[in-house]
Image 1 (cartoon, rainbow, N blue to C red):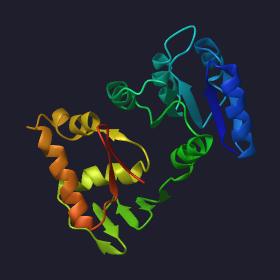
Image 2 (image 1 turned 60 degrees about the vertical axis):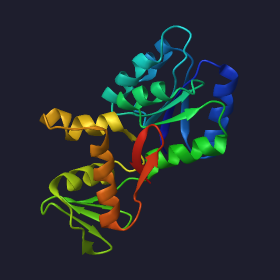
Image 3 (image 1 turned 180 degrees about the vertical axis):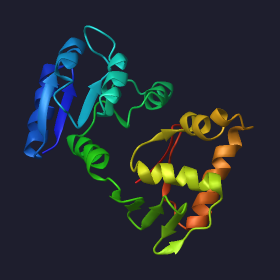
Image 4 (image 1 turned 30 degrees about the vertical axis):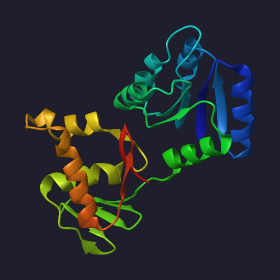
Length: 216
């Protein structure tokens, strides 16, 4: 049974969410404040639902602490602000939901974040119809190798290793170009993603408009 830390200052909302998730066979602990969350964070949770607007302290400070404890995080917020969402994802959030949201949508996001993991077998990772062979530096789609340039292989490998996680454009540009002191412009990433899509013949990489990319 997966354990979820629900960090939400509205007690009525938190009780409704917990009741719903427990019917879905999740174990849920509630924290109604920053300090309450800190007190419970060492209880080995698989995922946290983090409401940024906490009464005692800004919830963004919890994000890094949760990620340092290897806890996956879905941000829940009333802020329908693209810059805020991008910043949260840049800082390690796995996904986000804008309030108000449907509980069935919440469940789907939790399922996607927790349960859709690639299958690891030695140095081979299988995800849907893809097999990532780390030793050979090859990606197979439906049993056939995909002819990828070195950088394209690295980018697609990142997504296969982290299904359903949203990577912002800034994260990807930093990881694959800026940290290597390579020239980059706004079209560099877009062109790389397009080449990967063309070579795999499917749109495995989904565009999250204004935010970034992920595979589902």
